[in-house]
Length: 146
Image (cartoon, rainbow, N blue to C red; front, top):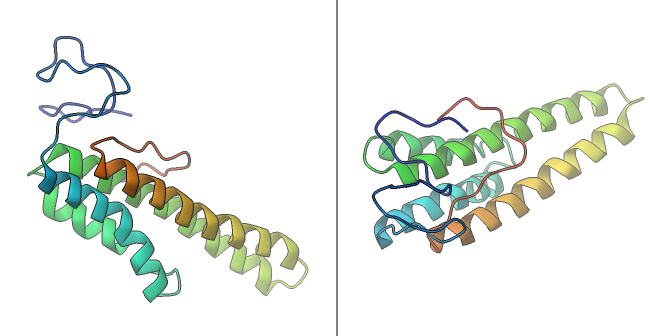
């Protein structure tokens, strides 16, 4: 994961950094930013339920646009959530293409199930970690936002 100039990379040890925290320990972040970071993760699941999965990337994108210059912690949470969503969203599109071709229905159903479960599980874990001031490093991301 690359670091933006002028911002501390959260969740990784920073020798001599401004916080002097130990690896694996939560970074001191005020409650407003923890709540915003948790909302960046949770907004994806909320949007997924409202739009049947098609607009799950909108919530994290809006949070990234609002907080990108105000809080590096929220920016990283929103960018990670967006990037993770984008990858799973594309997996869903590929799954639907397989389903439309009829022959690929089993593969398409597996891809849709993995995408759906990945979004739910990943964002719930991300939300819980953000409320504790910890970061979430999603396993499958297309790095578009940073």
